[in-house]
Amino acid sequence: MSKTLIIIAGLVLIIIAIVFYFSQHSPNPDTTLKLTPTASVKLIPTASVDLNMKIISSAFENNGEIPSKYTCDSENISPPLEVQGVPPEAKSLALIVDDPDAPAGTWTHWLLWNINPKISLIEENTIPQGAVEGINSFGNKSYGGPCPPSGSHRYIFKLYALDSILNLEEGAQKGDLEQTIMGHILAEAQLIGNYQRK
Image (cartoon, rainbow, N blue to C red; front, top):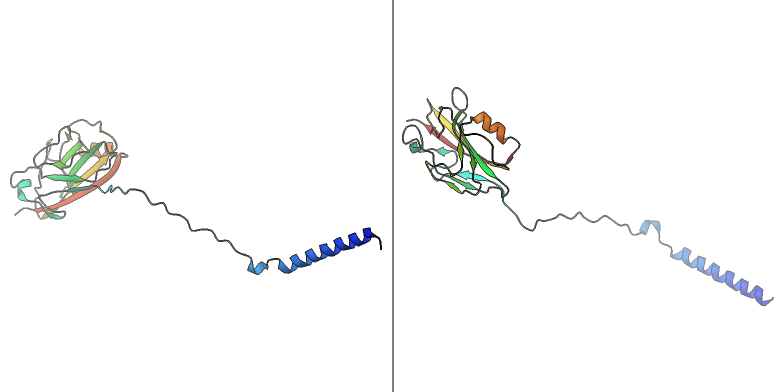
């Protein structure tokens, strides 16, 4: 046999050996490593900002009894109101105080807007500097205290944080204010007081 044939035969044997080796060591389809998707990552904010706005009063608790001092049976002055958690992007605040239990329909007791959003306290019987008052259901441009004709009524102090300063003239009515703030509310809060005349 010539050297060339011997070399060719040797190469064939090597190839056969290689093929046999890999056929014995190829991965079993049933034991192939299966990759599973990794769990989704939840991003945790680096800082937490509480934007839960609140309106409270040192004169009465939420759903508590309003002292007669702030009603038509006594001094009839506005109660002290504290404001907390106003969104930092707020440009102004608006306040609506009304009685949904009035016999003739919801009765407006106080309208106030363009309140400085940096304010933390509206003291009793005061109007914050720069704020504007509207006309209440008594026909007055002022606060009108609870004066239910009979039974116990709820008085809702609704505070709105707005993204703008309102272009609304002094003496506007509740409907005008509600229409103007529509689409500009960033946050809102409410405080409910009850009153029944003795």
